[in-house]
Image (tube, rainbow, N blue to C red; front, side, top):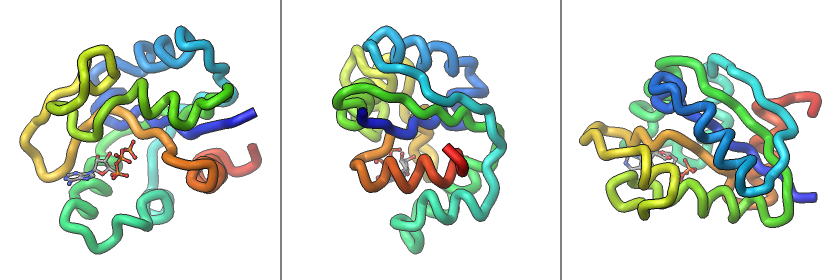
Length: 138
Ligand code: ATP
């Protein structure tokens, strides 16, 4: 069965939206395989966001992700990788459709980084890589 890595980013955890994100994942019919509140490290984020190194939003993104704990989640189910990205909505919360996590709960704070509440893996390769980073041993 397909698995994906979901992160409730520090803005979502701070705002008390961890349970709401888990609720939406479960309500959709996906299974929670692992859930852990973690303080990310610079090393973990450098690996997780390697593809963005050198981009203007990279350092603000890493600083934001270090600003508080992240809820790391592995969810399982048929089509869960595109399925969760569909639940999450567009990267920019201002453009995300109502009904999505970012569309319903996020807004654009006009900062250097999109504080967009959640992350979801974008392919089977990224999911395997990211699950290995956040849950070594799973
Ligand atoms: P996800 O966070 O679900 O991976 P995504 O795949 O659409 O969303 P990426 O392109 O992988 O996002 O970017 C990772 C994160 O970097 C985004 O979630 C957002 O927080 C931030 N980000 C991406 N692009 C920008 C941008 N142009 N300006 C500011 N922040 C950005």
